[in-house]
Structures are given as C-alpha cells and as structure tokens.
Length: 207
DNA sequence: TGCCAGGCCCTCTTTAGGGCCTT
Image (cartoon, rainbow, N blue to C red):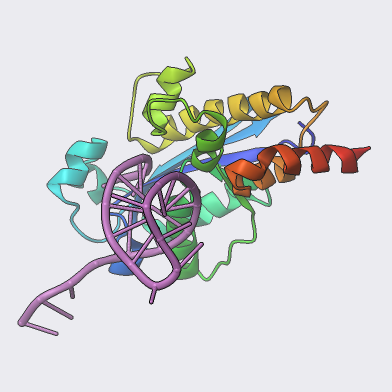
C-alpha cells in the first residue's frame, strides 16, 4: 500500500454520545507503517465525573484508576501530537470521530485528518461473517490478539490487524498491484451493488 | 416535564421503520 502510514484509534468513554455530555476516559492508538505496527500510544484520562458501574465492568477501568489519571485536555494534547497529519482508522469510525472531535474542540483544536471505517469495509468485504463486531471479526479472520477486549490500546491493535487484512483482501480480490488509503476509503463508501463497477473504474484510471 | 446518539443499511422503502455497531 502506497502512502500507507495510518493511525488506528480507539476510545473508551463514559457513554455513547458526546452531545449528551459523555466524555473520553481512555484512548489507544497505533501507527502502522509498511504493514507493521511501529508505534503505540495509550492514555487514561480523568473525565471529571464518576463513571457508571456498567462502564467500569464493560471496560475494566475503575473510578479509582481515573481519579489519578491526567486531565482529558492533557491527554488529548499528547494524542494530537501522536496523530500528526496521518490518516485515521477506527472500527465504527463515526463513534470515535465524534469523541475525537468533541474532545479536540475542548482544547481548541480542529481535526483535519481523514477517517476510514473498518466496520463499513468489513460489511462490504465479509458479508458472510457471523456479525461485524470487532471481536467477532478478529476471531473470524484469526487475527492477532492478546485476548483483552474493551480496552483502548488492545482494541486499537486488533483494529490495526483487521485493517491490514482488509487492505490485503481488497487488493487481492480486485487485483490491484497496489492500493492507497483513498481507494480503501472510496470502497468503504460505495454501495455494495456498485462496488465492482466503481473498483473497475478506479483501476482503469490508474493506467 | 419529558425527551434523549447517530450513521449506515436493508426492506414488507423514499409520505418509514428497525437492526447493527460503537461505550
């Protein structure tokens, strides 16, 4: 894959919607370059409010752990530096991009990075999978995992391995010599029924 | 007071509804 450095990102949060006042409590991110994970970033962050029992048991992150964690603003500043101007990837990117943008706006920063979504790609590429949860896809494709789920860095790493497989499978299934982030992103936004014709058109334009 | 995510995607669709995915 050309221009292939991407940052895969995953948030743990107090809930589902930043519009309802939910906050980030942990972020994990990995940098992929040349089909390898070459850097990792992980921060817990204090959201300034108690998290629910559901979130404590879902993530394994406790109120005690967060009480001594740095502020969200501090962690997001470091995340901004880690992300740089890389393209971004997340599993259900609409979720992570909402929290990223909401927390960035609190530190007066605006994201310019493009997002690609491994969920949208998986639904197009693996319609036969039992479902398209991250955990299921990792098992379905026999991807590398340390068995930890719902922690930010572990989920970001699993998403990274899924991303690398997705890129490889698009490349092989549609007979590309090489493939770019833009092509994968286009794939993720193309209606299923139009994928063959759109991919053919992209290939024709490359020659 | 009472409400409360949001985007994608399929279908018994488009004057809509409901399941999937993320925490």
